[in-house]
Length: 342
Image: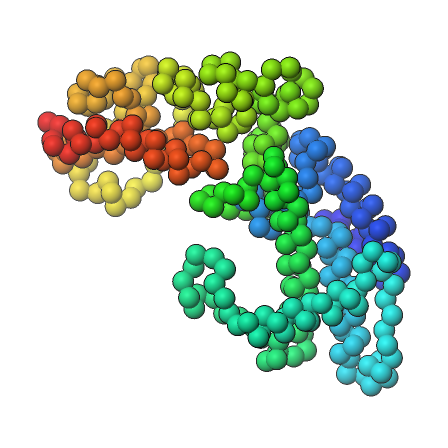
């Protein structure tokens, strides 16, 4: 990548952080063009490590700050008595000062040691190990300072995302799992797929509400139910779209099913796969008699088992709501199947 090449002179010479911010703004401009996303995409989407879609991008401003902090700590903790006694002076401008950042990181690490290990996620107690400031020395302390500066930069990005009602909706996706893309993934992806993936996560697809916001339309309402045509509504929230066969039409195109042998399918060899497509007519009679048509049904006549599969994924902010809706939709069918469908 070009960042290490540009980072070397930034760390050697006394260049202020404002100049580095201007360099990063220029890099972000061409990175957005390369990814095929609109110019309004926030830098949080490209560099935040806590986002639901993590991209393999590095912020040159963050690397600049970490490099300056690493250089300062190495000079302060040098084994050479002459170097250690001389007060190092690294000029980084007035907006960000490396000495204040390092001192603040040290104080935060000392405070974390006083507070102790706390639970910050859903993993069980004792699943993670903590490093304490008083029990480390040398390179470990420098690494802890650098990690603390990185965590502060990432926390600043999360705070910025919380203040963005459109592109920061992922901060409320508690049930969604983070997806991390690597450089190899992006290299083998089609350009339009990368663009669609990023724009769908950060609500930059051309929905009716966005087209009005961009000055391309005048009416933001949904043409089916007259609700606000946002991306989460257009995906699966529209009741008219779901009840009048919209989901069936949506899934009536090309569907690719990747099957893997699991323990749930062991025990018999007469599994029959039925899909909600016009040319497929192998639904079990008990489902064919009802007006409900699950997307995919896998059934076995010998063991009297039926597996229902739903492929329509809702918007991440309403995954639990959509799951409850689907459970209620097929509740009567499930009860009837449990009584015996042969």
